[in-house]
Image (cartoon, rainbow, N blue to C red; front, top):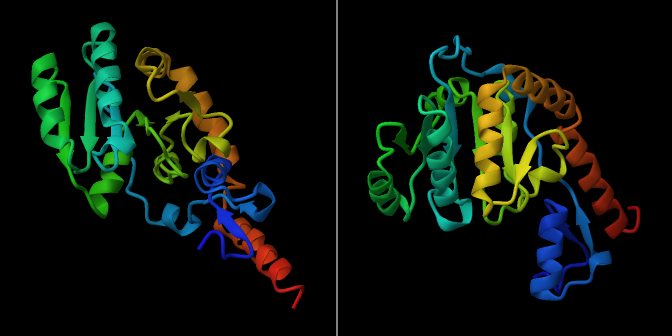
Length: 232
């Protein structure tokens, strides 16, 4: 399909590089159109309650599979809890790595501070975002990754893997290599300890969100169609 296509649309430059490297597709054949988040989603968001004053909550939400980096999230949590013992970590989602990670949490003796929420849907997802103080996406390889944008609808600061497409459009989000759990832990600690930092991240990302719109992506995609059709 990639070879037969006149043009290829990738959701990020990260994905474009993968397509070039893995399939030998020339770069001048590939256009990048980033994903976005719908403004209508902001109209139905769960009412944000007062966040818990006596503890901070850190969220991972996604498939519990190797690609999403859940084991790196758990290792970072272990390091954070050594410094901030009253932090609380949530892993929402299901996948083939879940049984192993449940056992690992027991081995690390962090089960009282690391909770497995299972697969969530609808208002459960909204509530989980709304109750969080930080959202972490430690993906090993992520073509784009919309969940950080969804978290930001609730004014939740985000920490992203540099190996993700969404990191290209969020200049002011915190970023770390998925494998560098110590750097990840240090940045989690910084957000949890310094409310002014968290507020500044939210403020800057809120500005960036104004331009991350599906309408803009549609305009870019229409331009691709226009060029392929010869302007017809």
